[in-house]
Length: 160
Image (cartoon, rainbow, N blue to C red; front, side):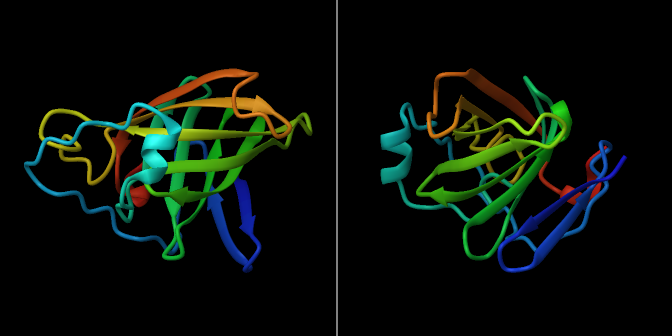
C-alpha cells in the first residue's frame, strides 16, 4: 500500500510501509564525534540553534514505522503506518512541531518531537538517534500521550 503526502507548495511524497521513498530533503549532517545532550523540554529545544536535517530518516516508533523528511525551508512531512497516518510540521530550533492526521479514521491532532542523542552525537545516524515527544487531539500537544521512536536510517532511500 502506498501512502501519499502533499505539502502546500505542491511538493509530494510517496511512501510505502517498507519506507521506499524519494523526496527533496536537506542532508542530515551532525557534528561528528561531539557528544550532544538532548534538549529536556520543548521550550529548550525551540531555543537551540537549528541543525539542518536533524529529523530526516526512518524510525521505529510507538505508532509503527515512520518516515520523516525535512525540506530546505525547515518544513517536515512524514508518514507512519498506524491508521495510514501522515504529519506536516516545521522545525523550530531543535524541535519538530507538527499536525497529524489519520487518513483511515479522519482523526487529527498536534504534537512535537525532540531529538534524542547518543554518545558521540547521533550515533553515526546523521542527526538525532531518535525522537521523544507528545501528541494530542485537535490543538493539544499532550492530551493523547507519548510518541517515541528510534532512528534506524538517516537515508530515506534506504529505509526498509
